Each structure stands twice: as C-alpha cells, then as structure tokens.
Length: 180
Ligand code: XMP
Ligand code: MG
Image 1 (cartoon, rainbow, N blue to C red):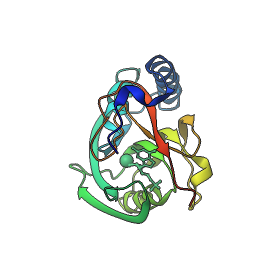
Image 2 (spheres, helix red, strand yellow):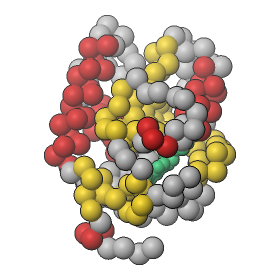
Image 3 (cartoon, protein in one colour):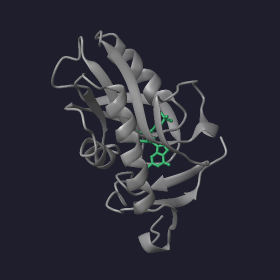
Image 4 (cartoon, rainbow, N blue to C red):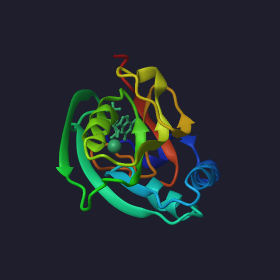
C-alpha cells in the first residue's frame, strides 16, 4: 500500500486537533489542580499528541514512556501485547495519566491497566486522542477522549502504517478497516 500522503482523505485537520488538544489540556489541568500528574506516553503513536498536550497544561507534569507493540506489520489486532520498553521510574503513589493515540479493540489498554495498577499508583486515568468505540472487544473506557472516530484506519499526527505517515500534521484515512 503505497498511497501518496496527499491523496489520503483528511479526517481531522491540524487546526481541529489543536483546538481539541487545548480543550483536553484545560480539562486535565482543572482535574489535577494542586497535583503533579505523571504522564505515561505509549510509544510510539502517542508522542506527537503528548508533546502538544503537555505544552497546553497549566499544572506541572512529569513524563515517562512505555513501549508496546500490539500490532504486527498489518492493520489487524492480534490481541497480543508485548512490552518493548519499560517505565524508567516507579509509579507507586503517583497520579498516573496514560496518554494513548487511539483506543480500538481495547486489548492494549486493558493489558496496560492491569500492569500499571499492580504498581499501586495513587490514581490511574487514560487520555486518548482518538476512540473507535464501534471496534471495542473489551469494555475499556478513556477518562478523556479527543475524538470519537468511525471504523477506518487512520494515519498521521504520530500514527503510522508500517512506520509511514507519522509526520503528517492532519489525521488522514488510509483505507477502510476490515469489518471484524
Ligand atoms: P487496541 O485494539 O489494542 O489497539 O485498542 C490500540 C492500538 O492499535 C493501533 N491502532 C491504530 N494505529 N491507525 C493506527 O495507526 C489506526 O487506525 C489504528 N487503530 C488501532 C494503535 O497502535 C493503538 O495504540
Ligand atoms: Mg499505539
């Protein structure tokens, strides 16, 4: 699949994303007033979103990253999750806010939630830029959602297809996702 990036239909343009990220940051800043949330970004898709989000926060926040692989080189969820980079610092007693690019079947976050909760954070919440609610297999919910999107495979703003398209400032539609 070697579609030219400019031929891909825009689902969310950069301006809309920026405005929504500002709203999410304001809501998160209010909810964590007086606290220092510990942002845990899920690599690699979430780092562009996280970089924009943290710059709009009005509370201080510390940062760590977790590397996971939930998909092979194709677009189908295997339901298998592998940790490729562990956290650098302990989250015990911290107000952890996991930052995800997209919630799809729910397999990934369901697994992560279990792993993180076992380390006894003071609180554990999830912010996801995108949410494909219609694809959910496991009933996980994000505390903060940027956009609910239909069942299409999207790229750009950090999200990739075989490592391509992460650089795009808009979220674009790559192809229709399989119906399963
Ligand atoms: P699950 O199904 O575990 O999936 O909730 C979450 C992870 O799947 C990837 N994913 C996508 N990546 N465009 C992408 O670039 C998409 O449309 C898409 N849908 C799911 C993503 O890595 C996410 O963290
Ligand atoms: Mg991801």
